[in-house]
Image: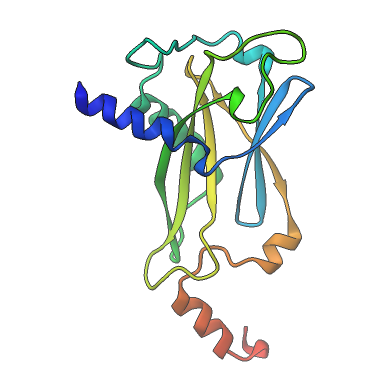
Length: 184
């Protein structure tokens, strides 16, 4: 039990390390990630969040165990991104998040959601060989405490697709640079 509490403490304190979260006073919070020239936006409606099980500070475990959140997130991840010869999508972090990291409290409508949390399951695209060149792309899947997985809206971003490497190894990038443009 002490081990589980230690793991949960690490997860709890690592929360703001990766999420690109945008609080919207209109009643929603959006978490975004980018991969393969696309932006993935998961919108958490505050009204929907209010209907999920609460997790009080004095409770040892969240309503939805992290393992179940990962299994649920894997189903969405497998639909959105695929492994390739150049990269493999791997679980990177599983974090507990809540609205008040970036939002005023109480909310403008007077509601108090301080005991409402969700899981943010992050996957990174790691190169299969060589080093990391041009950064690592990532995908964040949001899982609410009632087991609902927020299906992200997918937006193509041609500028990012054209200008940003898609998780290529350093060797692949070097080979590409050394190949004349007419041969590509």
